[in-house]
Length: 260
Image (spheres, rainbow, N blue to C red):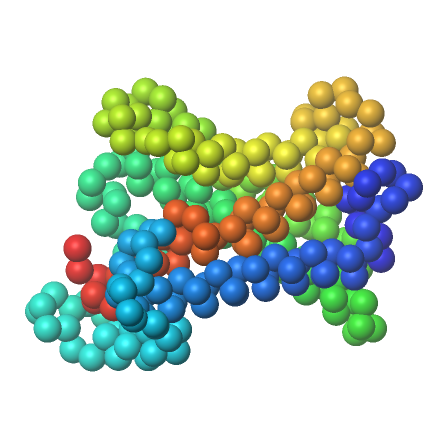
C-alpha cells in the first residue's frame, strides 16, 4: 500500500513506513507524558518547572491521587457533575466564553479543527490497517479517503480560521501582544505551517485551489513534509511545550469539579 507522500513521485512511502513514523511520534509523546506526570507528582505545577528539590514523583501515584480528587466530594462546595464538566467546561469551554467572546471563538475553532482532523486521520488509519490484515470491508481505503475529503477540507478551514484569529489577536490586541513572547509566536507559527502545508500538499496532488500552479511531481515531498511535521508537532511535541495545557487543563477542571 503506497501513500501519497514520499521523497519523490517514484519514492513514495508505504503504509508500514508510515506506521513506523507514527509509532516513533507516539513513543516520544508517551515518554514526555510520563516525565510530565512524574513532575506533577513531585509538586511541579507549572510548565517547564522542575520538581521540588529532593522529591521524585511517580506517574502512577499522580494518576491515583488525581482520580481520588475526581471521585471524592468537593471540599469547596462548588462541585459539579462530571458530565457537565466534560460537556460545558471542556468541550464547549464556557470558562473562556465568560472572559472573552473572540478568544472563545478562536479556542473553539482550533480545538474543533485539531481534534476532528486527528480523529479523521485515526479513522483512515484504522480502515487501512483493517484492509492490510485482510478483513473485508464494504468499501476500499481509496473510497473511504474520498469520503473523508470534504470533512477534511471543512475542518481544515475551521482550524485555519482559528489560527488566523490567534495571529490577529497577537498582532492587534495590545494586551495579548504585550504578553506574547517569541516562544508563543513560534508555537502558533508551527500550527499555521502544519495547516497550510496540508492544504498545499493536497492542492498540488489534486490540482484544486491550493496548487498555485506547482508541478504535480512535488505532491509526494509536500505531503511527506506535512506528515512529518504533523506527527512531530501535533503529537510528539505536546508534552514538551505549552501545548501540554490541552491535557493539563481538562485534568485540573475534573479534579477541581469545574471550579475557577
